[in-house]
Image 1 (cartoon, rainbow, N blue to C red):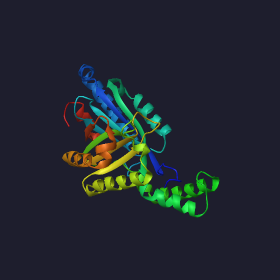
Image 2: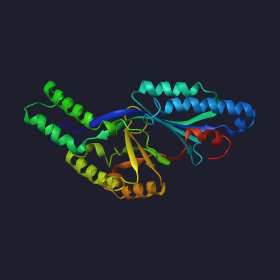
Image 3: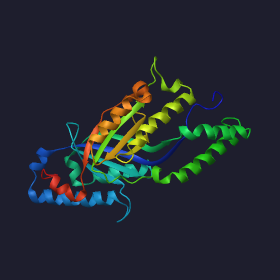
Image 4: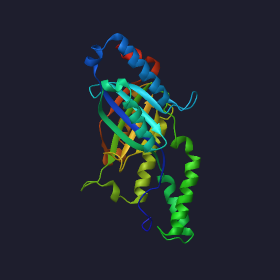
Length: 276
């Protein structure tokens, strides 16, 4: 599509923030037992208010016990806007438990569905009507197509936090160096590679729930990837197989990986006593 814009269309949904904390166990152990109980109870009530809008509604915040040296706790929040996410951060900071939490990392992004498969058809339909790229008529046609797509894909754009036992999160980029640059590859070639890449993920669809979020202009990497599963070994299998795919093997850069075990809020008090 040499005369069409090179940028694939995307649909955006929930705003996300991942928070990664180190817990100050030394200070916690030095705190009186009755004060620990009070702090834990207050934190559980605050987190319950973040977890759901109301009883029985979808989960929008989840807590994980993090493995490895990078931290101790992970909080994942899905909200309708960045402003709502900022309020969640402020609400958490007002709890007494926050005095024992040391922020080690965070990631801000927005749920994104890439439309490589349908972008060509959308552009071709607009061109067939005689609209010039980026003209008011063209923009209106694209906006209408995206509106229809957003309505059809609403459950995927505004997901609940999956009820899986394990979380794997990592950020990633597409390479744009002197020798290999994803952003200079013709659209049709990128479309082909992304189609083949997606086929691998679909084969694991019954074992892994994957949520892709875009972070260009919001954080240090271009995308964030959340994988949710009841068997953590499937993370290794899926990512390993994808490494052989052309998109990943040639054009992908990966950041740090973070893995956690789902920590139901009613178990937070037990976790604070050193037991999952």
